[in-house]
Length: 365
Image 1 (tube, rainbow, N blue to C red):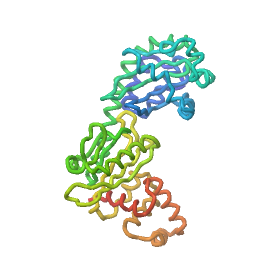
Image 2 (cartoon, one colour):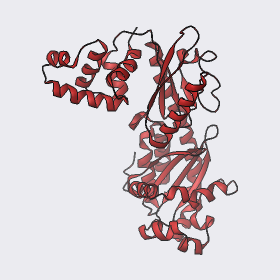
Image 3 (cartoon, helix red, strand yellow):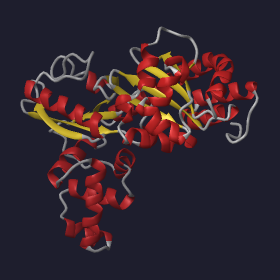
Image 4 (cartoon, rainbow, N blue to C red):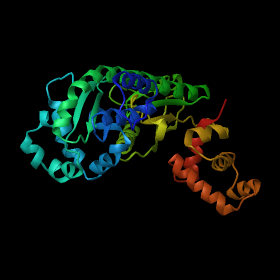
């Protein structure tokens, strides 16, 4: 990819757009390069579905975007509201296409936040994504409104390439999600990737095999036949959406199990979380009959545990006490307790019984 700090030619930039489509980790640099062509500070790419919105910001504007959200302006963002409400338009629109000059001077969002930071002049466009998802691309903090207007023709020419690249990123994201749950299928774990609404993005055969016995209609969100369990799942999905935290819930399993089954909802973070596929969490359904210890390498991959933390976690599933683990590892018991605390944080569990119940579902056959 071309140096994001330098202005690049259109042909080179179009090549960078399709490179980002194939390598989604490069979108932030691409947005910075596009913004740099017009003297703007940066760009954003948001994926919105219903009330949920996730996105990528280039480094030049990321701090401003965070401060905007932390100050609560997202709930009063007339830019987004008016762009969404605007009649369908196959191009970019500036702030002055969506607001009057008086509004840009006096609306609190502009007067109190955007204008003092030199970020009051921007341009954005909506691109229809897969299903009900909308992709919103914005270029932020032009030198002034005249510069934003002058860039529109060039941005409109790039827009079809951006739309095709975003579609490619979405397809690749779905393939990665499918690959992850298929790998879990091979070790006997029923798993699915969910979006922030709780809808299934990808599921493996073991998870699909529970549809009709333990799992119900999944068109709006994953649902459980067990009414009490489904209420707990609804609350867990709301918690994931609100605070990015996972949950473990119990529910009545399929008839052949004749007992409670655990569903572990674990948020995806960092590079594991895919903006374009919409995958925000992985749901694991535990089989209470599984009682073999999980593979240490698998624990490191799934939960980003260090080798020492994986040894502690595996030791507990094998029935060892903390003192036994400390002795076999040649470290103090206080070190093992510290490692266990880190394991709790990374697996979103609070006590040994919860941790063991989760990890016993992840053994290799």
